[in-house]
Image 1 (cartoon, rainbow, N blue to C red):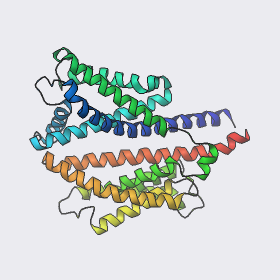
Image 2 (cartoon, rainbow, N blue to C red; image 1 turned 120 degrees about the horizontal axis):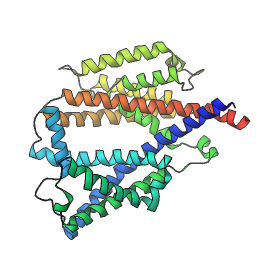
Image 3 (spheres, rainbow, N blue to C red; image 1 turned 60 degrees about the vertical axis):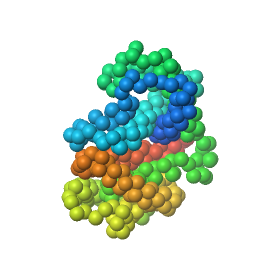
Image 4 (cartoon, rainbow, N blue to C red; image 1 turned 180 degrees about the vertical axis):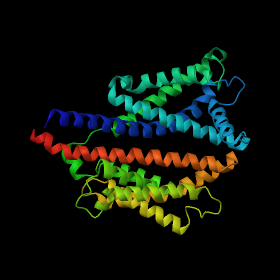
Amino acid sequence: MTANAQHERQTVDVLVDLERGAAAGALAGFAASAVMNGFQYMVTPLLRPSSAGGPPATEQAADRVALLISGARLDDADRKPAGTAVHYVVGTLTGALYGSLAEARPGVARWKGMAFGLACATLVDQLAVPLTGLARPPWRYTLRTHLYGYISHVVFGVVTEAIRKRLRERPSEREARTSTTLDDVSVPLLLGLTSGQRTFTAPTAVTIAAASSGLGLEGTPLRLLSSPWAGALMSAAAVGEYVIDKRPGVPPRISPPGLTGRLLSGALSGAAAARPGKAWFAAGVGAAGALVGSYVSYRIRMKLAEAFGRDKPVAFAEDALAVLGSAAVASYAAMRQKQREAAPLAQAA
């Protein structure tokens, strides 16, 4: 193996680890946000934190987003669920950042995640939230309120690290070859969830990845997806879908024709991004993800459009989420394929 090839493989290995860490951290952060909510519910009667006379920062943040998007504030009935959504989004994104940092700098995971929790409480609660005007200055709150915040974030940090560490346990080489790994499930599932939002976005990302970086489709029934023409056709179809989606009178995605197309999209994308020998399994997982994604994304979009009073801003946000999500997963699948192709060369060297 040449020096350039070895350097390229090391770069790919680092990028794959960072993406895996971010994914594991995001899932851990989401779960830890739920645990944190439950913990706060139990200890609130004991510590009795003060709100300094205002609504929670999460509800204020959701209200600002609604005002920015629709020009109107949230109704009272929508404030609490919107604030909860902000809580989970922030927890998930924070967990993703932490997961990536833990791959590059394992020291951030010290004290079994307690250091991460303390950092979140200080940087977010004590600094960022007051500076953005979502809360009053720290000295306006009681000591019990600060204790409540720090303990809650320590719980968040410890749970996030425990789940992240479990998800990042590396199986042996033999186990990875013979068993179903987390990648075998998560990659097609995420592509399927994206297909539930937009029919052609995930296939577009997969065909572009196959044509540029390669997904190991040569010699398989899906080899046509490696053609640049396939990527161009899929891209045109995706753009057309983005335009049509904003027009009134379009049948809902959960109608039989729309749902069928999304199921096929999830199956195709999952199979194309799968490692050798797992295409049929990945196709099934991708189709299942598309089914779930169709119904869940439809309900969320309807609810958000009702809360904001406008559908188009929600639709554009959904477009961006589908594009960024499918591109990230497809690029990860391409880098994993590069790893598999480089493994025999490394062993021979």
